Every structure is written in structure tokens, then in C-alpha cells.
Length: 449
Image (tube, rainbow, N blue to C red):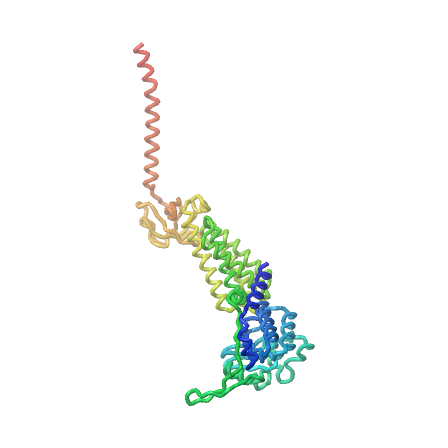
């Protein structure tokens, strides 16, 4: 359902893109510059196809220029082959410029460069790692033959790419590339002491509309992974809070976007299931308020699922580190502390702590800090029996977020216990006095009679 919605949104947005001045195109011609960034997914592929079709329907269109910066394609081979056919069969010549500086053309994107009418590359950009040919030989023939075969497995810088002939020319700027296109009308202008050639032909720039760009951005490995991680963490947080809050709403939105991104990218289903199941393990220990064995097992499972989630294109190491560190801090510290704060009673999931033994981290006289089952707690003991740091302790009771502890040996009677015993003794004495008074009352009555 999400895929269908995204596709419909993309097509509607592309169809409503501004067409530009048709009269200028008929007089001086026009070049349609189409920005292609990130992995070529279905949204991007549809956008490129639609823009080429628009140029073919525009009288006087001179060329379509794909401004390319892509590490490959996240669509199947059939979609890449269809896009290559559209580029090859276009009535208006399609050119590719790999830029600006720092751009790349790899994988299936590099193969599409070979299909185009001509190509250029900017300084600092690279080309290569094209892999096995996915474009049908019937459409483009055999790609990367002879010396150019090195581009299948290696990444070439701009000069190497031009030297081997996998890119036609070196074009420092997009303007330099445009004025070199066939059919583009130019003129020479003076800019200070410099004379430059500029196009007279109309240049029309096109890029994905905002909403469509959102879906395209989501369908990148790093963004999809981070959205999925944030969604799982927030929804688990919301599970332990009452009602539906901001965290739940944000988590639901992130889950929808993250699920769309993962669905658009080649991924391993078992890794996705492992990440989801890890949340169940986290929840078991979060409920108790203390991270234990299930937290460790779940963290290992979540890490494995994160690393192996995507197949062809993995999330960056920075994104993986951010997701794993964030999840670890949340589940080992943040979430347990939140649950202990929210459910600060001894009857919600912590009866097991009464009687547990631990260690005094600081001196307790009468307050301090103890470690029980690996978790730090505020602690309180009887003033008559202070506990030095490092001594073993036993949990006697829980008062909100504070553990009432005692030494393993020689614990003094707590003042509240003494008060309760005195109260009990007074009540017992009162009951005995009442029993003794009852017979005496009866005798008095008999005597009176």
C-alpha cells in the first residue's frame, strides 16, 4: 500500500512540474537539466523517464542533461533496462554530467552513463565499480570492453575515466558541459578581463518535488535504518507509558517511513525480523527496571540484524554507530531508569528484589548508593548500623525509588519496626485489659442486685 501511494505521489508531482517557456524553446531551443542524486529507486527512475518524455514532447527541445551523483540503483534489473531503453530511444539526445565536484557514478548508474549520447565529468568526481552488465546487450551492446573493462571492478578518478574513454570529456562545470552539447546556441560575453562562452539556449532545471524527494531520501540505506531504529525505540518507550503521547506519534511516523525505505531497498527479511524480536527481549528487562541477560541477548541480536539488514547497499558506519550506541544507551540506562521512575512502587515487577544481596558502592550512613544485579540504586539503612563502601548488603524493602538495605549480619532494628512492635504491644495490652474488666463488671452487677 505504501509503495503504491509513493508511486502515485511521485507521478502526480512530476506531472505537475513546470514546463517552462515553450516559445523560448521554439526560438533558441532548450536543454532540460534533470538532477539525479542518491540511489536510483523507483521514484527516481519514474522521474527520469517522465522528464525525458516531457522533452520529447516539447517543440524545439535540444537535449536532456542528467546531472548525476549516484552510487547505483535500488531497483531490479528490468527497471534499469527499461530506463536504459528510454535513454537510448529518446528523440532528444540524452547527455550525462557527473557533478558537481565530489559526485560519483557507480554500479547501474555507471552503466546508464555508457548508454547516454555523451557524457562529462567534473574534477574530484569518480566513476566505476559498474559490476556485471544489467543493461540488455540488445539495447546498448557490450559495455566496458577492452581497456575500459577495468571500470567494472575499480573506481576511476575523472582523468582516468576520460583517458580510458568511459566518459567522453572533462567538464569542470555544468555550464562548460552544456555549451559543448550539439545544437546548443552560445554567445561570448566579457566578464571583467575574461571572455566566456555562455548558452543562448534556454536551460530548464528540474528536480524532484518536495514530497517526492522525501520518499526518495527515505529510500537510502542510512536514512531507512535510522528511521527504523528510532521507530522501534520510541514505540517500545510508548508501550511503558500511559496513553498515546508524542513519542508514539513520532514513532509511528518513523515506522511508516522506515518501512517504506527498507521495502524499496534490497534487504534480508531474517535480519529485519531479528531487529523486531530484539525489542521483545529488551521489553522483558525494561519491565523489571534492571538490564539483565535479556538485554544483552537482545543487544547482540539487534547488532547482527543492523549489520546484515541490507544486501547490496549498506548503511554507513556512522549511521550504524549512531543507531547501535543510541539503542544501547537507551536500553541499558535510559529506559530502565524511566520505568523505575514511573512505576515507583515495590509491587510493580520488583518483588524479586526484596531479599536480594548486593554491594555498597558508597558508604551508607544512613543514605548512599548500592549495586544490586548490576544496577545502581539509592539506598537507606538504619542509623544504628552504617554500612561502609564495599560491604555486602541485603534488600529489606523498597520505598519508591529507594532501597532499604541492611548488612548481612548484625542489622539493627529499624525505628519503624520498633514503633510497630510497640504499637502492637500496646494494642495487645489494651485487649487484655478489656478482657479483665468484663468479669469484674458482671460481679459488680450481681452485688448490686
